[in-house]
Amino acid sequence: MFRTSARQNPLRSSALHLVLIVYTLICVAPILLIIMNSFKSRRGIFGAPLEFPRGETFSLEGYETVFTIGNFPLYFQNSLIVTIVSLLLTVVFGAMAAFALSEYRYRGREILTLYMILGLMVPIRLGTVGILNMMAAAGISNTLTALILVYTAQHLPLAIFVMSELMRQVSDDLKNAARIDGLSEYRILFRLVMPVMRPAIATIAVFTMIPIWNDLWFPLVLAPSEETRTVTLGAQFFIGQFVTNWSAVLAALSLAIIPMLVLYMLFSRQIIRGITSGAVK
Image 1 (spheres, rainbow, N blue to C red):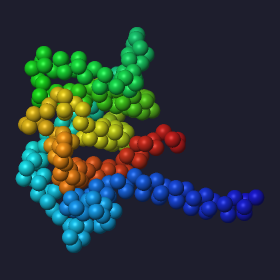
Image 2 (cartoon, rainbow, N blue to C red):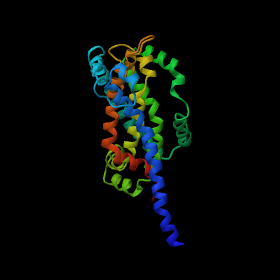
Image 3 (cartoon, rainbow, N blue to C red):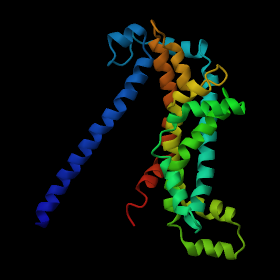
Image 4 (tube, rainbow, N blue to C red):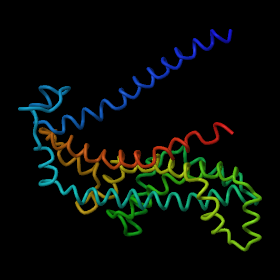
């Protein structure tokens, strides 16, 4: 029986790797098509969409249009500001709320925890009209501040849910020893607890940054002006009712993919550790 299972293991491993390779190709193929066709002319995009750009099909007119007609450096700057600031606020406030929910015992804690988790179930877009009225009443509509506040509120429930569960696994003896040494609760959180949770923070960062960077709904509703336009909203500039500049659209999408690829390459190990944390003790 031992020999039979040993012989079957390589076959199972090969089959598993084959499934993963096929799944990876399915996920990567659309991205490769976008990047490949961004270096083609309009005729090349529709004539040979699956071929690599070469000879007559190769063209940089899409990138030239992006950087000459559209103000994409400003759009990238706006997207970076909104994404980074929203991520920082989500992590900081999420960690503070998760620490309060996991560390202290007080009346109504379970109800408050349930209230926070309900934010994962209710889409924030259902309150678009109310959010727009609130931003207009506060005088911050059509600003990056409005986008930052909305995205922070949107992703706080996920950050609180993930971090509160992991904070319960941090040793109480370590935290109590820090309190005896005179450390404040803020120092315990940011000096002792947060470094242990770097994999979880990396995972939260990915699940937060990608939806913010790719979002079109709230930039279109809350900040549609030229000064506050984001990358995804700027790409819509080249999509017309009758004529669409597909070379420019694909070039803009290819440029928008770069920050997410860099993020994954920098934090891939932390992301995997954060996803698999708790699976094995």
